[in-house]
Amino acid sequence: MNNNVSTATLRNWNKLNTNTENRLTTRANKCMSKKRFVPVEYFSDKSNVKIIQDNIEILSGYEYKVEDVVYSIAVYLLEKKNILSKKHIKKVLSDYSFDFIPQINQIEWPDNERDLLGIVYQSLQFEGSKNKKGSYYTPETVARNMVKDIDFSKGQKFLDPCCGSGAFLLILDNALPEQIFGIDNDPIAVFISKINLLLKYSESEFIPNIECFDYLEKQNLFNLNSKIYYEQFDYIITNPPWGAVSCENNDIQQITSNESFSCFFVKSFYQLKKSGIIRFLFPESVLNVKTHKDLRNFMLNNCCIDSFTIYDDKFTGVTTKYIDISCSKNEPLQKAKLYINGQESEIVTSDFYKTENHVFNFLNTEDMDIVQQVKDMGKYNLSNSTWALGIVTGDNKKKLFPDFKNELEAIYTGKEIMPYLLKEAKKYILYDRSQLQQVAKEEYYRAEEKLVYKFISNRLTFAYDNKKRLFLNSANILIPDIPGMSIKTVMAFLNSELYQFLYIKMFGEVKILKGNLMELPFPEISPEQDFIISDIVDDVLSGKNRINDLQQQIYNIFNIKEKEVEHIRRTLYGTADKNIKDANQ
Image (cartoon, rainbow, N blue to C red; front, side, top):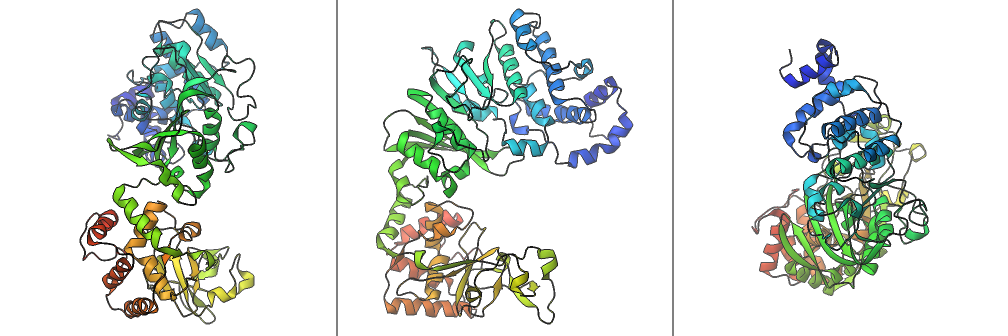
């Protein structure tokens, strides 16, 4: 017998007349499956994770409809609360034609979860469906943090336009049912949200103000039959879907990216009362990715940005971290609060205008002084340079070979790119341009000199090529044009600690993007300085360890003092050790 299966699970299998022997033999495969996953971060009590996982495994072996499972558990919870027979409860249930499954409630369910129905619903959905919706329910600790400072003593009204099963609605401890409003386009989630409010306010007789429709599709905000058609709200707080949608509504013309969370934010803002608070949970990428410039512009031009909160966690099944941004309908402030790991600091919001894409970069005084010092000396940039993508074969398995043969040519990938140098190529290709899906101009690949860099990287990594080598599309090509600088000198700047620091502070990107690189400032240098740096680069290319000499040359050009160098190194490496070597050497 599998000792990992709990006693409660065995009892549940027996109650459903499940063949426990067969179930146990297939359990390992199901646990390895990525089709469904339990949202661990959403539990109120993590000790319940195991029993929920086991119960979901049981239910996944039957052909029950998800909505019928959720409905049956809801009936059980209402009955347990002794409110199932009340008139307003019957009215809510009568709006749904879900089927009751008596066997479901023979399963033992935890009785200390804030949103058991939401957990079960999330756990029963296929991963592909969740990804397509971009819908992940908000952990209680995050939801509580986002509503901790709001007041309902003067009849204020709260709206969650993407309420899901009611994560935010359930923790409004000082609100009355009539002050709480929610919308979602998922009918099962709306049903759960209604039941959750009925359970929370079990002593009150009311019909929850939860509507089921797509918030973005309503031209005039809400349909005429809705109680909240003309409402303006004091608080609009939510975790919106993440993903692409159509944002053609007149209320959200300012959004050009068709990103769902941007559209939800703009539309919600227009339904906010004067001095009202709007607070959204966003993916961390909203801070700096170029695609989200439209949302950042809207916030800067229309909102008072009050605070940013950075969270360390991730949603189950999602790789990106998340943040919340709090704004209000007040006159803009010069500074906003920044909360990281419980620590509060202030940031100057006018600094957000200092990059082309209005990046929300959180610079402290030391950061800003260094960045500004470099910008003040900047006279040139890479905007007049030549850029090219590596080769797209269309079928790497068929068109790349592991060994050299006649007529084949070595081709390099991003993995072979180090600072200044290239590792030995591991792939070979028959370079027939007519048989390749996408190629740049021949003259770029065969340039007498060119730089190549990793596209997906957490740091700037540029290598030198003067052998007319080929590169796959995991590497990009740069032939720089900076007056007074040789190509090797430009490479030294781009590989330097200082420019790595600049890139992090100005853009915060994981990808090394052409648009960001083009914004980096380059100084005017003398022919002597260019000769010295190029000569040191030649030494590095020949195998000599002179990286620190190059670092010092770049620092000296910008008059970066030792204390500032220590700050840069602490930022990059976690230490100010002046002898630290490049991370990729």
